[in-house]
Each structure stands twice: as structure tokens, then as C-alpha cells.
Image (cartoon, rainbow, N blue to C red; front, side):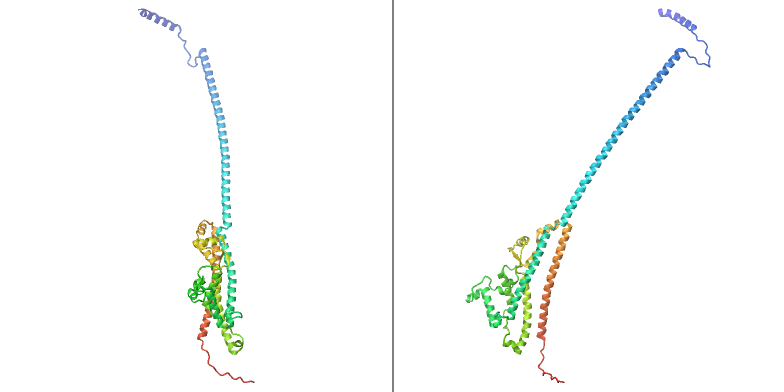
Length: 386
């Protein structure tokens, strides 16, 4: 009820107020401002400008801060990179230095291996020295045998043949019975059985092992050669026999006979000397003999030394294993030593071929002499004096 009464009164009041406060007509060409609006606009402009300035300052500060932080970060990264580069350089330098040292050590080891002789090279040098020494000694042994046997074959004074062929035959039998008495001869009461029965007629006495065991073995080989070539020496021509014309003719034939016998005995004497003990064996050579199952003595012959050098490169396990580990330079030196060894053997073969050539020439001369038809007797021509 109260609301209904108040509505007409409130409407009349508002109508009066509006009628009292009606604005004045405004001119369209001029903006209309009042003091309050101007003040508010001014305040808002200042506030906006202040806010913009603060935002600008903040943005500027943020940019400067970001710039400083970025600068510091980039500087630190640069420092890290510089330090990393330096560390990498140090690591690279250390690696290169270590690699250089390793390569230097490898090179030094290679130089050492290429210039330091191997034990096999030392063995080869020792074997070569032993072979040459034994060859020289064998030459002296052969010369001694030839000197004694040539005097025997020529019937020189003091030898059995100088006194006659019967004495020569008796001396040959006496030597056989004293050194090589057999069971049959002992049963006949001629001698006492020896340790080497019939050794003077057996080829094994001459050539069995690479070296004769002792002086008795050398004598047995020489006695075999004597029975093989000239068991009995013909009586020497001397005194009236030699002075007669027929004796001179017989002496000429005897010289031819003695020359052929000396050649044959000389060839066998050379082989005996090459198998005679003539050089002291090294420890390595004795080891190789024991590996063969042979009782190694202190002395060896030229043939034994050469045989050991050949066998060492064929059947010795130590040499084969050392060859597998040899550097190229050592292998080349080993090849050079083997070539020198081959040349040495070829030289010995040349000497042997020279002896064989002499034997062939002597056989040819003997055959030619046997086939020669001697001339019939013819009268001596008469020479007229001027």
C-alpha cells in the first residue's frame, strides 16, 4: 500500500529535478569539457605515462640484466671452450708423445734385432770355423800319411821293400797278425785274437761313421787302404840292378807304377784325413750329436762337422723354431751364411773332382799302354858322316 502511494510522488520529484537540471544547448564546433573531466583525464594520462615509463624501465632493466647474464654466460662458455681446447691440446700432445715413444721403442727394438746376431748365427760361425780348422788339420794328416806311404811304395831305404819283396810280404803279414788277428789265425798259433779282427780288410774300417773313434781307428782305415791299393810292395831296384841298362828300363816302368800307386793312395789318404779327429767340438755340436743318439767325444773330424752343419738346418727343432721368430734381417743373414756354406761345399767338390779327373787320366793312360802294340825289332839306321 505504501509502495503504491510513493510511486506518483517519486515520479513527480524526478520530473522536477530533471526539469531544473536540464543542460544548456551546446555548440557543435567546440568540445565540451568540465574541470572534473579534465582533471581525471590529466591524472589518467599521468598514471598511464608513469606506468609506461615503469614498464620501459623494467623492460630496459630486464634487457640489461639479460644482457649481463648472457654476456657472463657466453664469457664463461668461452672460458670453458678455451680450457677445453687447452685440455684437448694437452691430451693430444701427451698422446702424440706416447705414440712417438712407442714408435721409437719399436724402432729401437727392430734395429737391435736386425743388428744383434742370433744364437743360430753364432752356431753357424762356430761351425764354419770348426770346418775350416779341421780341413787344415786334415790336410796335414793327409800329407803325413802320403809321406809315409809313398816311401813304402817306392821301396825307400829303411822300408821292407828296400831289402826285397819277401821282406815286404813278411812285414805285411806281421802287421796284420799284430793288429787284426782273427780267430782262425789264433787257432793256428800265429797270434792272439785282437779287438779288431780283420779290420784291415773291412770297408767299415775305412768309412763307417763320420769320425774315427781314436788313433787305432785311423790306423785301421789306413791299413785297409794299404791292402786295397798295394798290399805288397815290389822289391826296390838298387845297386847293380839299377846301374844296368835293363835296370834303367825297369826303373822307368817302376816310376810309372809308383806314380799311379801314389795317386791311388793319395786319394784314399785324403778321405782318411777328412774323417780323422782334428778339431775340438763345441757344446752345440755335442748337443746335436747327443740328439742323434751318438756318444759325443771331445774331438771331431771335418766330415762330422760338415754333417752337423747340414743336419742342424734339417732336423734340429731349435733351429726351426728360431727361424720362425727371426726378423727379416736375421733371415737374410742366415740365407747369406747358407749360401757361403754352399760355396764352401762346392769348393770341396771341386777339389774332389780334380782328384777324380787325375784318376780318370791315370786309368786312360794305363788302358792306352795296354792296348799299345810294341814295335818289332828293326836294324839301327846307318848315319853317314859328312
